[in-house]
Length: 134
Image (cartoon, rainbow, N blue to C red):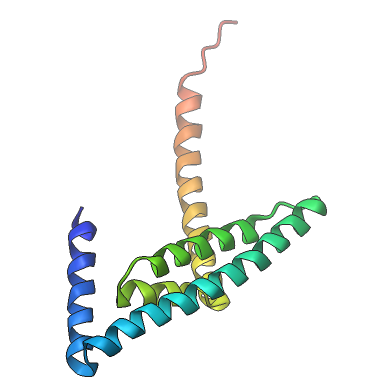
């Protein structure tokens, strides 16, 4: 809930700062040009990610990395469509492959920690529910 309030306020503050520094017209042109370039790049990278996903599926591999990569590219495209300099900056950052790799590694680590934690809890709960009728 706090993010829904803070993000627009921060976007407006950044927009106001840039328009104060460079002028309103240049700031608006900057927002539109960053969005246009970002959408072009996300379409291009999304297509290459889709090709890699299909290649791995055709080879019988589990396409974990291309799937996560594709989700981050889709998120980047959504950020680029939303007007604002901060969201555009975050969207452009997500279009760099090394940034996506860092995020995917971090998310994978967090998922593994969560999985181990919940697996341990589930294992303990299952052992308590066993009834020996012999």
